[in-house]
Amino acid sequence: MADGLSSFWGPVTSTDWCEKNYVYSSYMAEFFNTMSNVPGILLALIGLINALRQRFEKRFSVLHISNMILAIGSMLYHATLQRLQQQGDETPMVWEMLLYIYILYSPDWHYRSTMPTFLFLYGAAFAIIHALFRFGIGFKVHYIILCLLCIPRMYKYYIHTADVSAKRLMKLYVGTIILASLCWLFDRMLCEKVSVWYFNPQGHALWHIFMGFNSYFANTFLMFCRAQQRGWNPKVVHLMGCLPYVKVEKPKTQ
Image (cartoon, rainbow, N blue to C red; front, side):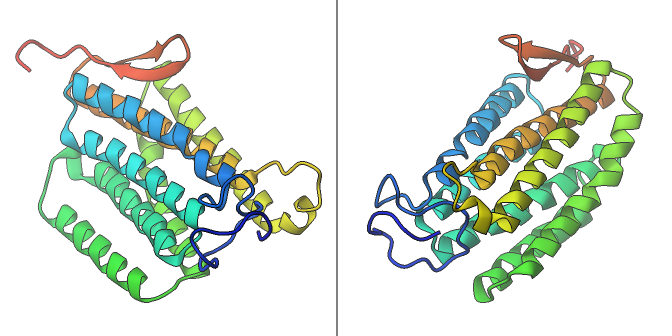
């Protein structure tokens, strides 16, 4: 949304959101939409440290790193509102979903060449096409389809998990994605009304925050399921009494 200080980055060439531009700094177009990615980076860092410390498979380290890359890309996009940076935000979104699909659908959780090769080529092809052509609603539909592909497998893991704490992670995952989606829709569909309010609730910034927690809960749940499959006796414990994470007890042979 226009108004505010002069722009260091030049005219807006990307999708503009329902936040006044350059209010606090000429170097940051959308302050709240930019800074709201910080919680997601911190949560992904916590997940990465836990995955490395307990020697989970590399796929989970890559997953947490992809969450951080996505959040950093989003920060650059909302700070500049340039088309190139928007592509740097949207392309990692697709790559991250392909990674989730791989983790969820790899047969019996074993690496096999066909699936990762196909997903890698698909991700590379999308990046090239997305760099050449500007998508609007097509990108959103494509992203939603990738998200929907994950639901059957997530549900399967949920119903086969007896641990109450692990099931709670899944419920938090569902709850945060519903709240995030409502905030995103609120910001896009009611922007004209919100823009004249004395206080802007910053729906898109809330989307970032909820999605940061959503990714963390999803990753933690998947780590629990994987540890259970490998006989690592996983437990959901809480950091400082509030943030859940997975603690495992591996057999001595591992």
